[in-house]
Every structure is written in structure tokens, then in C-alpha cells.
Amino acid sequence: MKGKTFSAIFILALASLACGIDVNMPRIQTPGPEVVEEISVPIPDPDETRLNLAFGAGELILSPGAKKDLVEGAATYNFDQFKPVVRTDENEVTIRMGNVDFDDFLAFDQLKNQWDFKLNDTPMYLDIDAGAYDAAYEFGGLSLTALSISDGAADVELSFSEPNQSEMSILDYETGASNVKMEGLANANFNAMSFSGGAGDYTLDFSGELQRDAAVDIDTGLSNIILVIPEGVNAIVSVDSGLSNISAGPGWRQSGDRYSIEGEGPTLTIVVNMGAGNLTLTD
Image (cartoon, rainbow, N blue to C red; front, side):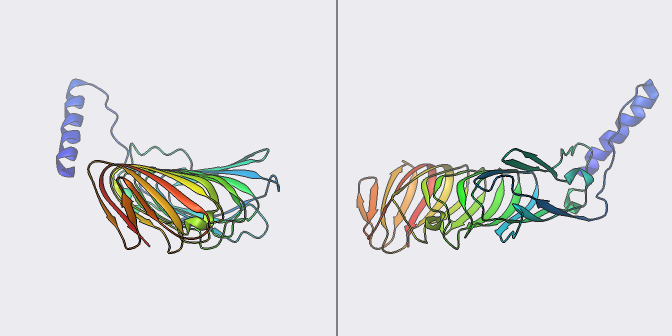
């Protein structure tokens, strides 16, 4: 296929010379030397900060551990347009990948773009807007007042290995044709959660400590969904899908499209809207 494309361009070039027509030939861009840029962003407001991360293609790694600043870490890249741009406006911090034009770029397999950031445990609203990327998120022990993630074709592992130190008003995740695995979601300490996806494989594991009643809305297309509800948690799952296979493990009781499992403490109420696919309820 590439050979045919090159031949077509070559023929077009010859024809343009014959006809006296100027044609802009593609420039072949290749990656440059690898750059490791240290990122350090001060905390603008100790009471609550909004952190916006705008990331395109590559690998994004987030974890707790920033000692002094809001964000500490490094961006590693080998294409100068990947250089991150940092902006602070009052209590809002934005870290954005530079504007990238891939029209003339042919060496995609040689590109490197990685952000490896540690976050402070100061109260913050975290907003992540990403494209086709790989991500590893560890949010345990942070103080997230809200979490919003939007991405495209992604491969993401997200975890709250320890309780979130702030009450989270909303955990919102919108994704495309992705593979997403989320663990320790009860530790996120959210009041409400919304997850929407396209065609993908999604695992939502609600292990951890559920501190209050919480509501979860899940809306996907053709997908495989695994919901992990730990033993001892009260849970009610309502399913709206006429074309899905539903598998519920021991302990689950079914009444029409409603599945429930008994436990002690707060109740997790989940509403699942699926276009088609497989839904597994397990512990």
C-alpha cells in the first residue's frame, strides 16, 4: 500500500513538472533527540485547585507523591511539538501538549511522548482530556474533590489503592473504543459516578471502603463489562439491554432486569445501559 502511494506521488510530481504546475510535496519529518524536561508546578490555592491535563498520543503516568508542588515529574519526548505548555490562571493550572501537525510525519513508530507526574495531596479537581494513549493512574491517598476523564482509543489502568482524602462530588469517565480497568473504586469516596464508553472491554472494581450511599450510571455500546462487587457490600444493579448476556455470580438475586446482593453498610446503586455485549457481576 505504501509503495502504491509513493508511486502515485512520484507520477504526480512528473506530471506537474511537465505541465508547469507547482505541487507541494510532503516533507518527511523524523523524530529528533530524546528530551527529558522536568515539570514542577506550584500550588496556586491550598484550599482547592483545578488541574487540567490535555494529552494527545503517548503514555501518561500519574501517581501520588509530590512533596512540595502541585505537580512534580518529567515529560520525555523526541518531537519538539510535544513540548508541554504550562499555564496558571488564579487557582487553575493547565498542562497541555503542544499543538502537533502530523500531516507530513511518516515515522509514527519512532515517536516517544511520556508524562510521568506525581501529584500533591492538596484538595483538587482533576480534569484529564486525552486521545489515543496508554495510561497508568494511581490516585490512592490524594484529595480529589472531583475527577473527570475523557479519552479516545485508550488502554487505561486506574486505581484507588487507598481512600481518597476528600469527599468526591462526581467521578466522570467518557471513553471510546478502549480497554479500561478501574480498581478500588469504593476508595474514591464519590457520591456519584458516570461511565460511558463505545465498543470496548471495561472492568469496574468497587473494592475498598464504601463510606456512603453512592449512585453509578454506566452507558456503553457493544462492550464487555465486568462489575466487581466485594462480598459484604449492599448493591443493586438495574440493566437496560435487550441484546446482552448477563452472568451473575453466587449470592446475586434476580427480579426481572434488577439484580441485588445483600451486605452491611451503605448501598451501591448501579444502572447499566448497554447496546449489546456481555455483563458479568462478580465479587
